[in-house]
Image (cartoon, rainbow, N blue to C red):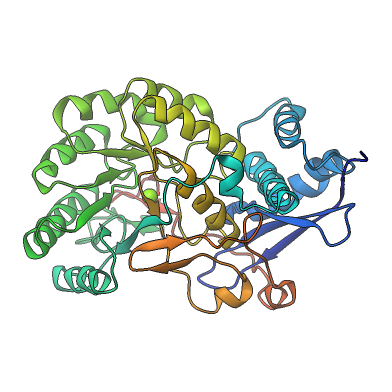
Length: 401
Ligand code: MG
């Protein structure tokens, strides 16, 4: 049998809304009309991913047998010698997800069937409720409850809380300032207010977004314990993960970690030592469906569940990939859902639909999603020096975003 091969790869960039620069890879094959889509979105450094694809990854994969996903993924990883970085992982993810899409189309099956079939009909999702004050936060939580959401992430005034007062030293440079202590107080107040108002029926979540010192994260995990969160997200920066032993020793709050992880070494020991309850890596950032499937199976052995990262800077193609993993994985926990605006369903036909707090895959072969390239071209990516990640502490020093 003559293998079907990769004939050409197109890298599509588009910025349809909210300044999210999306990178979509389209793999065309030797079979007329057969192609696959993959997410390679690293929104903050999208040019670097495009260059990695065009100059390094694509020249290697042209002519390869589309069926050999494992071989192509593993060789693409080691072909650069240096590996496990966000740019290369995203570039490889674009190819990897597209090859899973193609394999599904060849088998005439959705990708979840190739993974082992459904464990559930749909994925329960959590969404993000924020607000400038307690009143607005509670309003938003109740609005989502009315729409059927049963898992709600509660934040107060953005990830860093509301920046209270101005104690910057004279001459402090411009930036996005936050005060970790003020954040900690306001987040706790918001969570207490929401929990006491909505009762225990609804699952509440919170994202520290690595904005506390490790010892304050330990203290915060202890303080929120009585609020019975579904999970506490990214309590620590990846650089501080050894502190998870301290959090575990002082609190039973379930812990979710990993949206910034690049390298399997980062999640391996946390899972093996049962220091977290949910892996929540960014699937394109870890290299695509192939490594995510492996991580999910690995986590299952240790009783750890999945909660893949699902912000607006994961493209709709990436969200479709998340969802195929979600409905398959026996150890699925929850899926983050960014509630795409309606027009994104025109731009990405087949984008999963959310009803009553559940995200539903369609039954089309492959990932079940497409892109309207003409429409995508109407939203070219604009270059910008990012400001929200220029985070600083009250004394003006740089901080993690
Ligand atoms: Mg997060």
